[in-house]
Image 1: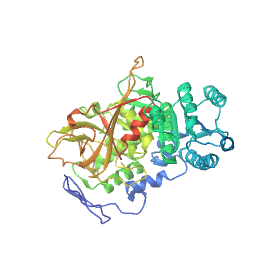
Image 2: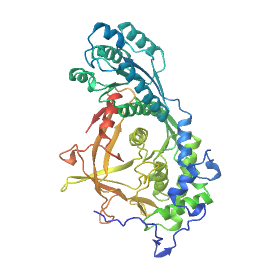
Image 3: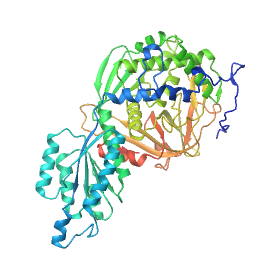
Image 4: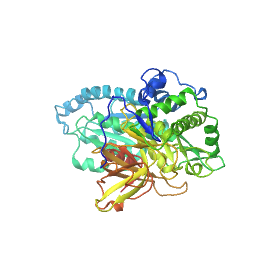
Length: 509
């Protein structure tokens, strides 16, 4: 395990090529740390034009990405008979005579309105609960005629469970069902617990889980409306990803080369480069000029994203690193984009980029796309690449420490070696898309584990950012599947599998 010094506010020297460079002063925009610099720019109320050479911060990024998308629309209903009618019968069955269904509906609605505002979606709940078969038929007919991204069904009576299963079967719309404890028997729960297209919550007044379900629906809605710009090859093209609906706009890789070439060393570029130096634990091989060139990649990529109204970017980046060089490694630009919440996929790997997008939308966490291998003696997973987000806990959270190095395979330029936190729970995933004419369902590789450490470079080979981790689901880590998997912080595997079930994606290990 690599030993890391604790971060400190005490000024320290940065070292490269044997030259001591004084730390930046704390006054002026160029003297801000990268974190403070990005937050200061991101906190402005208006998007800042990239054509002027000014950094577009995280707040503006989020507004630009979501502003043109329609909000997800969720239709819903409470399902129970009026309490007065049960009093007349004189027998309540589960949930019993002390259960105040009307009062509970009012209480739930307050939480649902909070969820609606927090997530920026529309949740349209019928005011009157569904009681009879005719009520349910009218609800189904209304759903089939309206624009609906998902359903929210909340039953308050065991005997009305048949209305829930009927709606699920007849609408075939992704459905979140909340049944508080004491409503259903285990037989009812089993009917929908693993049913594709359903997220069933049988838990005591668990509106937090409902929020997670609503976020799943919002994620799918946004993925369908999103656009990835792919910088690859020489011919433009546009396609739609089957099942998930994301648009992929392919542009010649020369577009990035042109943007990079025409990016001047503006004050904003210099400030970003200086923030990279200030925030770095150490600077090893890169020169100051290398770091400035690396900062330019962020602005070149950002202009393309802005011009194409894209939500994510991926690029066939390796050809430009070979001789004759056409651009520097874009790895620092990728780190900054991911730190802002903008997915950036390496080597034009579509499935990896889709995974980064999905994880960002669902869990508000940027990912680490990586090459996989294993330590057969320790039965540990080892993953590595030459870029990663540094804000692995989220765009508004403190960044992980990092070191500036050259690109591992190319041997030049500037890339980050992000140092992940030992003991941190992680989720590792990869979406596996299908061809347009395939009848198979897409798959999602899903694993969970914990960071053991970041083996030093050298002695290890591979790419600059690496992690040694455990894998919970496998007795033998050699059984792990896939390439270019994506790692995020947090034990999110269970929720990710529930998302997959809701959207008919086969979660596999």
